[in-house]
Length: 272
Image (tube, rainbow, N blue to C red; front, side):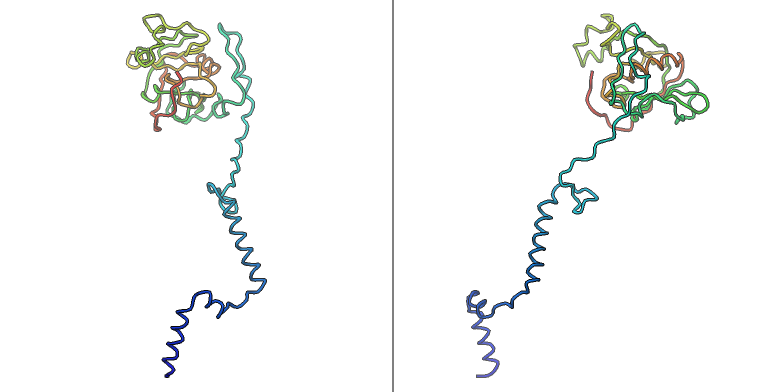
């Protein structure tokens, strides 16, 4: 028989052998103990990686995940200045602003005026940043934190501060009563709500007119501290009572009030 035929016959016999018999006939060479240890260690490491490295990636961890650790807590809010304490010489009590609620950037403070074209005494409201600026001499401004709402998002432009009121009555507009019938007892026809605690306008209100007509938009107090800098009310521009009292005493009737247009979508829910 030729060598070619013998080779073909040998391959045919191997192909017909069961795998177990083939393995017994041609065993694999033994692996060194060191190689087995390396292999076992690699498998253990892979299993450990897969078991622990789950969840969202977090830059800086060895496997790019946070292992379920909570994010670091924000720094504590420093103590409030004394100007946000309780006011006891008003017709109605003004409670102190609670600590740890209003971030320092919303505290009343003097800053460089970001609107250099403002005339001294004019007001500019930025609903997105939650600021009201009162223009001061020398390129400076007094900045207040404010809360805004649907009205500040629906309307923007320039108005005139027609007049101011201390502890004003609140009269619910007809459009609000259509949405919230429970406010009907406080309609214009019914004389509105008495001033004092619980009145949505708070300690002071500034009334904005345009072309001699009431815009129905107000700058007023009674903003809950947790909503300063946010857009959560169906009111207009809301301030802490301590701040609106200060603004009321500084500003003058007849100045220009500019409400900047919002570039953000409407946010959050209505409080009242």
